[in-house]
Image: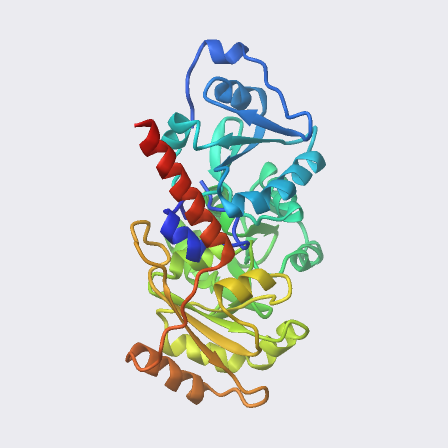
Length: 390
């Protein structure tokens, strides 16, 4: 995960992602500069002069790098302020105008907006949560505590698992050697999911809980080999066909080196429809491994579905072709749409359509969304000002 260019941001960031959403300047004077929040909210306004003192003064600090012209930043602003109020007294939220604080933006390699970092005792961690008030609060609270949650019983584990639906759960059961391996992995990979350890089991086992209540297991001596456990977690954490949202968008994005296949079901029944047709799309995923195959909440992400994917009728399959992870890409991924029949959704029909797309036999569905146009206008205005100043 990492910040992306303006071009990559159009296809990548949307309302699903709180910009991945990735520190420290040394200044003797800055230590003594006052830190003040805006009178209208609980968000600190930081600049090059008070950035260091903010990191030192607040053991838990979330910093948003933004641009005034950025449409996605404007959408995030009220949610960010609500989260700051909800977390007041526990975690401090702050913001930096990356267009004026150029040195800070360069130091933290800010290339896409908004980009957020979480500082825990001065150490930066990439923010990997969503853009809603609830998502920000949930992510920050989770990452403020220990990375590995230790439990004593299976019942205690069962009570934890229903709390989240889309990010994977990583579970280890066994003795101290496995616990030590898992604790280290949890510290290093905590942004990818939730880590649990259940003590006192007869045999070591590592589990990945994902997707449609799937549980994938690793047994035997490999469970105490850190590299093999990590490989297992990374390989199995993304289901072949799964729900995508603001919490796990970054994980899917990292795999979308050639594109992504979206399935947009009826907003009123999208989860039931996804479960009903999961076999078809799991087979599609197996046949076209270059494309992550996903579905989403078409009501919650109505704007993304309509503007980014171009879906107004359901069910529809959207294939985006292009490297989502390429920061130097000068063009957006290409988009192709297939309106599906309401009843019979078959692997053969969808596979044949994808093959036709790849063969260049299907016309591209083109168009920019409003936020992209707003961002482009802002970038043009900023460039014009820079030229005028020069």
